[in-house]
Length: 86
Image 1 (cartoon, one colour):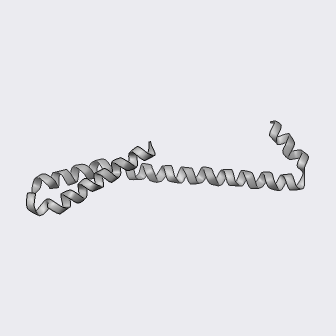
Image 2 (cartoon, helix red, strand yellow):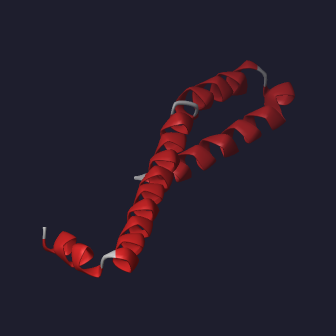
């Protein structure tokens, strides 16, 4: 889903660049296209940012869990074995 969203965002920004390049020559029709593509692409930016932040949060939680397990195994190896059974 993230890959498809990124493709859609990049495509929309390509249309925006095309529209900006020809606004002077073609006038209001491409200004409408610019506004339309902005309307479709801007809502996806916060979704993408939230997904990246969620992924980082999960990686941090996993790292903390691994560090705790390593610390516990160095202090009390039998306790780690018990946690693995639960």
